Length: 178
Image (cartoon, rainbow, N blue to C red; front, side, top):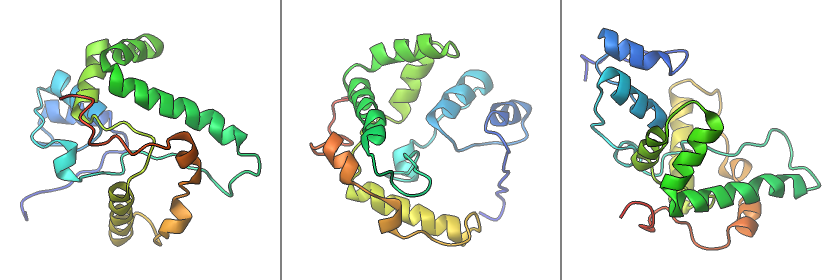
């Protein structure tokens, strides 16, 4: 792998243009980036997210500082988040149309394709997801992106999610795209 050069872009939106101009031969990024690169630069997905980094920590709900004493504000966010995840799992085409209409930025097929690339929508956190995130933290530290590692106990508080999503996680349920 000595002949591979990694190029960091300050904004992912520059990547499809770089692919089109031949500045780079490949890219890694979000499902939306993959769809954009396919549509506008003729790129092909050669590895799905699950094969690059299983249970990858692609997003998280972050709270700066301490947990507020009145947790109602958090529940007002988490409950609709869980409902949205549930709806995406059971009606991805309908949600694709809704996202397209609300954002006005992409067509429903764009959203549908992004859902198909990474179809793991669930508010619950599995042990595999937490372990993957902790490996990512160590990688970020080792590569110098963060100065110190964060302990799992400081990063994850599962008590609120457990109240909002009491059933097992749906990551491998097969409900989404059989």
